Length: 436
Image: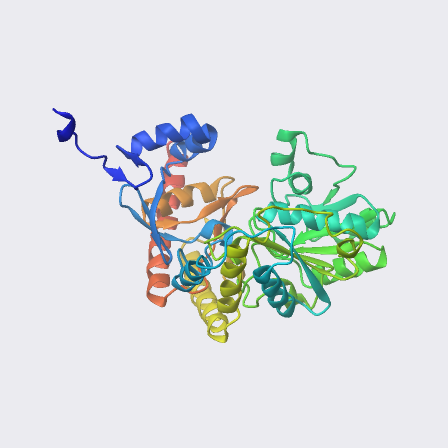
């Protein structure tokens, strides 16, 4: 065959191409992340996302999946939301990343919008490029404001993988990089007020950081009054309260910020993932004037070249506006009611297998009666055209996150497929037990 007769690659993306999915997987192992790439092959989820639109993702093979993971809420508005795409496209005619040293048109506009959206008392915004960096900023801010070092989080917490953030999380991640430090980052059990008060009593804690509903732990719900009591303990013992709203914010609970359902004004609040609209990396720390005093003392105290990139600010402004609409709120309540009812019906069919539903709005954790139960369900969901992921720190629980603009017909299809997958996973477990 001559040079002119060579067939073009099967997967040509203009800037790069692959002959096959197998070639792409092999190169992913060679040049990117061999451990993570192989994990998904071994898990029966050989997903390589190609085309994506609304709440659908397509594997390189053409397999279509309804996305009920949303990359932790990054795609709350769907993939490539048309309004966000249009806003960023138009912004590119005038803006780029911007210069982090100087006052910024887009950065200031977004900061004003975020302050207006936040609980009363929050007046300042500090930007990062992702949630982990934003958590680091929040922790540094708390340490400066209190002149204390200790940060309290819950056992099985997750707040990101960056320098300080990883110390607040489970040792599943912190030990790998020698970042576990119980002296600086003590952990207490979730929903245990006595343990929380005991660690706060010496008055040497800078802040307590809490996800409003801990995501990577499988969305266990706070007991009634728990978060309110933790905030009161922080005030009693001179610590700040940091609300991590990276996954629970932006209308996922049926309110723009989940913490407001508890009547709490945090000293510091963090947003990431979904605020990007899934189109441009951005994260934000919102704080009271007292907590953010370092901005007046030394405005160069934290520098982030890509933090608050102006194109990201435009994406976030449009995302915030969409999430704040009355019709979006109504849609979330409709989807939450419908999904909850359907899942409870499925649970009645498999009461000894599908043992619990943790729900607040369209934040759901589905509990299964097997230590790795959610992994079985995840694989069968994948085979049946739905993508949802197990909880890393409690693989009994499936993280199930419908989009906040999900169309009713897509919700119905997603739940039909979910019911089939839960049944197939149960049969697999039963058969494996019978074979022993």
